[in-house]
Image (cartoon, rainbow over all chains, first blue to last red; front, side, top):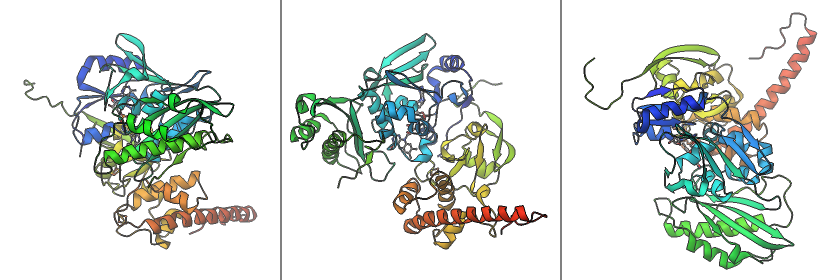
Length: 300
Length: 192
Ligand SMILES: Cc1cc2nc3c(=O)[nH]c(=O)nc-3n(C[C@H](O)[C@H](O)[C@H](O)COP(=O)(O)OP(=O)(O)OC[C@H]3O[C@@H](n4cnc5c(N)ncnc54)[C@H](O)[C@@H]3O)c2cc1C
Ligand code: FES
Ligand code: FES
């Protein structure tokens, strides 16, 4: 359970980091919070010869809230973003989801951008990025480019990022001010990876749903969004969530079974969590605390 | 140098200087040395325990700049710019236990003690931010740490008791300070 030998690089600028990545090619790996990479190295599932530790790179730890997006740099820790009040007000879904990412000790080191670059379908933040139609800002030896979140994920732990590219920041697009969101997941122990999870965004006008979308955690091979507007459009937001929704979710998700839960059970969880998340998001009185619709659900 | 015959990269040895428990310590170690191993093997601070080595059990939890982190998920070289506090820094004197250590003894919150350093560091940092947790919150606060002796009920009690002891001691410190103001030789502030 120890990592193999590597050369540690400590660049202080993005250009330096990218130059090293370009030099070492496939033998190099970016080290951000290390909360996913170090277990992989310790188990010798990967033995890169070079680690490009970006923790000393200046300027990567900022959160910027604009009229249209919340932009977070590659060194913003999960805990830092979770505690960022301006970000939570602009996009309540961030805090709603982050409270479910691992345990505090892991959120203190792990970065939100790292979890997106890592592309684990059990991660919360990749799904949130896709649900908001977010964008990744990548930089490589050839310069900078933007990647739409929907074009980024290819499969579990597989993305369209080149080996010599660094994700400098991601931008979560803000919803319209009236959009209501909720995040729910079920895990065996609070802070563990979700057996299933869902983020929902609902638009209500005059008490009637005019738009609804759901993004899933742990039940699809890549983060993907289900547009529920065709089944929910015109629904009275105060009424019980119709069965058509749970049917649509069961149809859409594609879970795998493991020792903790069968595929059927995860499918049931995803459908039930979506029903509850929609009910939470459409509750008539908006909550004062932007994160108060967060809940850690246990579905028996 | 003779021709390299394997792909194995050469070991990169570094001189690593770390501020631990307020003291700067330096040792030479490979770049791949985990912080947990650096503390235990290179600095002889064996209070930090190592269980799973992949972030799940919490036994290796130390404070970095006051925040709990997994020492097994950080390289020692990355800890250099930071202030590290281990269980030894929280309390190393049986006569003068920290509030959390005191609460653990009172509530029988340790059995074999293997998980204890990780719980104590985690709870110490938690109470800084949440000085008055409910038992339900206490339960969630320790959810990232595993006790193989399954002493959870008593550990939850210890979190709540530690909160009480902290409040009690800070009240007493305030009284001591008032007493200090009135005593010319200023000896009123010590408490064993
Ligand atoms: C016990 C445990 C439980 C966890 N539970 C959860 C959970 O419930 N939900 C969840 O989402 N996550 C969970 N995590 C993972 C955690 O959220 C990590 O923070 C995250 O997956 C990776 O972020 P990091 O900064 O630590 O990245 P690292 O571990 O440093 O890197 C991960 C990967 O991403 C690459 N990478 C990182 N940053 C960049 C960048 N800027 N540009 C290009 N590539 C980059 C690295 O090269 C590496 O391949 C858990 C981890 C542990 C140890
Ligand atoms: S040894 Fe570090 S978390 Fe288990
Ligand atoms: S007291 Fe034995 S592992 Fe917790």
